[in-house]
Image 1 (cartoon, rainbow, N blue to C red):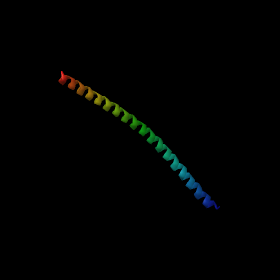
Image 2 (tube, rainbow, N blue to C red):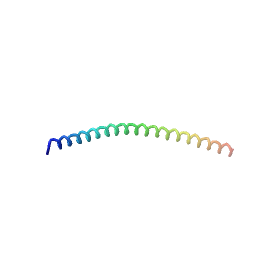
Image 3 (cartoon, helix red, strand yellow):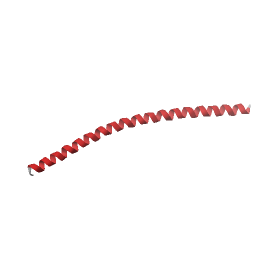
Length: 68
């Protein structure tokens, strides 16, 4: 192999390694963001379930009041 071909290969390998490192960093950021979004979703689900429970309680008490 000529020296020029080795230099080109080295440049391509370097560029590939740099791209891989950037992808790893982006992956870490996305995982962190995903964890945050999952936590927010879980909090919303919990709040909605509480509100639904309150509505059911209100509906049950309304029904028992109308029966009396």
